[in-house]
Amino acid sequence: MIANEPNAEMRSAVRFPLRLPIAIKSYGQAMEAVTNNISAGGMLFYVAADEIVGSTIEFEISMPAAVLGAGSDVLVTGAARVIRCAPEGDRQAVAAVIDEYRFERR
Image (cartoon, rainbow, N blue to C red; front, side, top):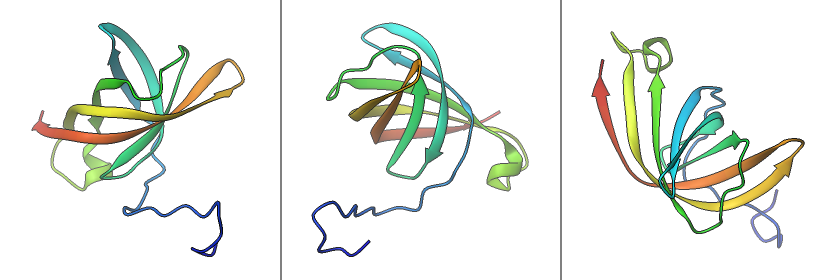
């Protein structure tokens, strides 16, 4: 895409196509989801329930050591804001901007 095109997307971080289970907490409700891709600034995941654009979610992802090149798995926890939702069959594709995250070695 050319940057001057009206629908051109500008991303500031490389996205990694990772399909990992993710635990989401939204409005006090816990649910399971699966990531589609992740970057340092955001993620796209699939969830069975509707999410509200603008809502804040808490998340927890176990990143496998092999993916990170680390000696052990790393737990990533944090908070993100939902910026886009789109139905895909019987689930929702949810895009979220990561506001904060922490790493814990397991």
